[in-house]
Length: 270
Image (tube, rainbow, N blue to C red; front, side):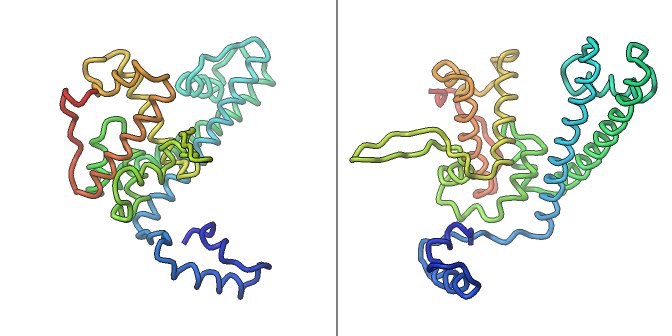
């Protein structure tokens, strides 16, 4: 059970006996929600994801330092991880004559660290690719537009039992992709998303939808027709979250019904 759901049943001071009594009381509630137990394979896949996220943050820190030190000397490194790593490889190989000797040594040390982290990230991604190929569920989830290797494996490893959700909407709400309902004095209004769900899954879905929107600019004919209608009515970021909401519901249907993604009919664009 989530600890936050047990807390209301704790009486006064926090002791082991009070916590045990609260757990026994909470477990008898008919509407209590429980966390399904993950398999060893799912936990291993999530360990790969968590480690990759940590290494990506370290790579970002190293790359930012590699770009910032030359910038203080008026040497601009082009934006983008590809350009930054290319400059880092030059600096590590002592092939950056525009840098002073002392700065080149410092940048070279940072560059070696960034390159080493990049190699570890690629190794983890190869491990995730092998897990993806062995998981029939992950391959079916990946048929949804905007859901790639990372999103499919993370979703398959995190969601153990999709039947615990009555429909796709509770699943999207579990990921905090639905607007908050605020009611007072008999009046109801919707707010922004709460951002209380799984941050990693929500970020992967939002990143995938951002990629779809960018692709829509260059290939509008191949995009989801609902995306064009949504972009015509909503701001960019709001449309991104709305598409992530729809994608989450489609993923729930795929997991629950053992199907693959089917593109909507043209008449469903509205």
